[in-house]
Image (tube, rainbow, N blue to C red; front, side):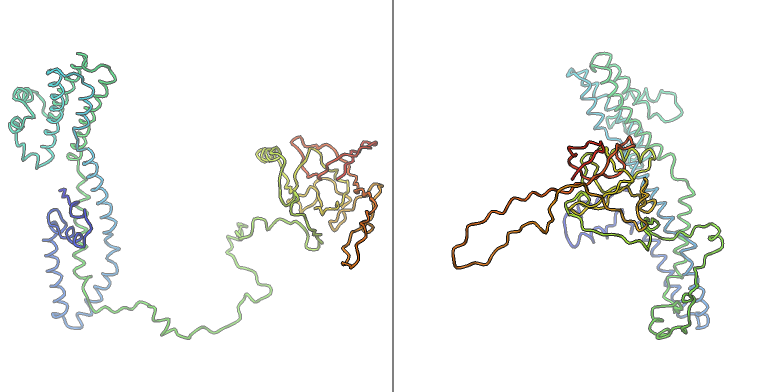
Length: 494
């Protein structure tokens, strides 16, 4: 039964909660009050018997029995699981029944929109279609709802209510069908709808189909209601729930008694009482032995997998422990720190190579062209600190993938040889200093002689990369080719 209580909780008030809690009509109190009173009577009868009718020895025996029953009741009767499943099924059926209750408004709006005309016959046609649909609903509801059947106990009551006319009742009775006749008014409405379509009151076939779909949907909703009434929840489920709930509360007559229970379980008091300031004798452990090794089950050792938790880069060897690594300062605006690239071509090529399984190399220097250094060509630093560039790979511990056979064993690269060029030592460059102020007029400024300083030129031969996908090793930021490159070595300066 549906009871509306929205008005009681529509405003904020302290008493609204009690208005909802203690409502009688449709409430849980009205459903279980008789069973609750019977349970309370038996509960207090058990309590009086235990307290006053039994001696101390009998009470101790009963207490032990009830204590064991109390600890195992929830395991024997999983009432929470059973009720949750049953309530879910009930609520789902109730929701579907309400969703398919069948409201005539949608169908009436469709008929009024699609069946055009203001002539008396057209108006009567629209009214007749809607009346036939409501008549079908009345025939269904009076068979599945007791309240509707009280209103329409027979066909005569339906005729007097105006949903069925006398000549229609005669036709309905004359139909030879041993089953229900809910479909007869739907058939009449469909025939009338076809008639107005032939007469042109419905202007197009798609519009007729839309009107017919509304009629069919209304009939489908009525069929779903009949199915829920004809096929209820399997009888075994309500029986199991009925027996389980009543058995559970029968056992609660004893397990919910306030008996003289003795709590023998370990509690938090043991920390500050019986085990206070007590600890085992301290003896040397096996972990202190120099040759100690972890123990594993034999089957784990045979599998060869101990699943040690190590870093993803821990097994990569970049240098031997005895190697001396030269560290140098790098300009913060250099490409090594900034990590800029001139184009996206190199990134696309690296991704393409990785997708086809090609081995890629990790670089921190931008590529300026298809040139790369010869593996056996030495080089050194420029005036600005530079990182020793070279094609290094993580997989072989910073060893050259080309042919750096002349690199010394300690990982140092030999210096480049400078071309003969004229340069001036930095110590010989004149520097203007600030003299302390004097009392006499200062001498006219003397213009120092112009000194030409030539940057050192480093010779590095270059070759075209053998990799068709682009350079695979970093190149120095050369910016100019020597003008007098007679021998064709492709010397560059920076």
